[in-house]
Every structure is written in structure tokens, then in C-alpha cells.
Image: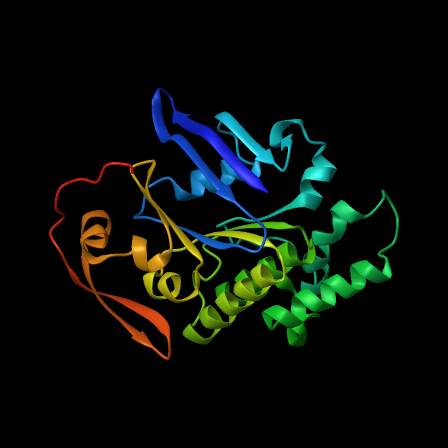
Length: 265
């Protein structure tokens, strides 16, 4: 469904991400993990076709190159949740979420029944229906994060790219968002999310794509990628790991002196 072939983004002559190739299929919940500065957000923006940096290589949505798609068609196929949680508009939450339906509406046309249903569903799924009439710009950071996630979900695109969707959320809402993303994937959406939370990655993801210094160093099931030696080398921490009720858990436990630098697989 989504495929990157040799994607490179440079800052001047220095590559921020270097010749990255990956695939995301329907029904997959995949996480981009790595330390700060690894290039995760840059890669996600390149895959979404947003941002000012010029990306080399190819990004394909199905059989079509991303940069050759009509903007409206691209917006219907791919929803993007940025890391920035700023909401500057003094408008109700429901209207912010309804912005996700713009790719489906003709110019000046009123919202359809399908638009209204998608907005209400997205607000219910993210737990913000009770604040639908509140001005969005005065909400807490965690509430804004859920409002903007609801806006992305309201697009009902077959692909969702989410940059740190659980950042700033309390533990209950972190779990709720991860369960929601997993449910969306099980319903057929391809979900690629940047995550910093190793415990959530180990428990919820189908695949982990681990980045380090602008390259992919591992790609596979969480228990195969998030092994102690690799975590120590990439993140500089030693984890504790185990299984509870058939699900893996992983907890960063102590700072670990980094070993030899990893090389891409």
C-alpha cells in the first residue's frame, strides 16, 4: 500500500535520512522507533509528502507515485498527524475535527451525512465528545493531542501516519490511543506511528522499524527487534522484559553505556 524506495532527505549536503526503503501494508500497525535525532519525524514527513525539505527517491501509494497524485486524492488516501499539537483557532472542537472531512467535500458544499457521522465517530473513539463545543485553543496539551488525532481519523483514509500520537497523554489515554490504533489496523487501515514509548511498542505493534542516525537498523516483530543488546546500543538503556497474560512487556530500567555502533541490516 505504501512503499518507500531509497528515500533520502538532506540538510545541506548532510543526509538526515539516508536511502531508506520500507513497506506498510493494509491492516498493519507499525512503529518507527529510535533515539532523538534518528530521523523518524523527517521520514514520516517525507512519506506524507509534507514539509519543505526535498526528498530524494520514491514514495508510492499503491501503484502511484506520491508526488504525482492530485492533492485531493492524496489527502483522501493518506491522513497525517504531525508532532506539533498547536491549535491557534478559537473554534469549537467539533469544527477542528471536521477539517478532516475537507478532502471528501466539494467546494462550498455543506457537510454530508457521511461527514457528520465520521466526525462523531472520531470524537467518540478519542474520548472528546464531551468537549465537542469547547474552544479548541484553550484545551490542555493532552486534550489537543486527542482532538488532532480525531481530525486525522475523521479522514477515514486507508493510511494513517501519526507522529508521536501518545506524547503528552496520561497513562490511561496512552493505552486507549494504542488500542484505538490497533483496532483501526485490524479493520484494514495501514498505520505507521512514531513512538518513544518502548513498553507500548513491545505490547501493541505488529512490526517495529528501528532507526539510528538516519538509517533503519532493524525491521521486524517487536520481540525480535527490541532485544536487550540492540536497545542498549541504540538507546543507551538496559531494559527489563517479560510476558504477562500472553503479551510482551518491556521497561527501560537503567542507563547503559553504549556499545559498538549498529550497522544497518
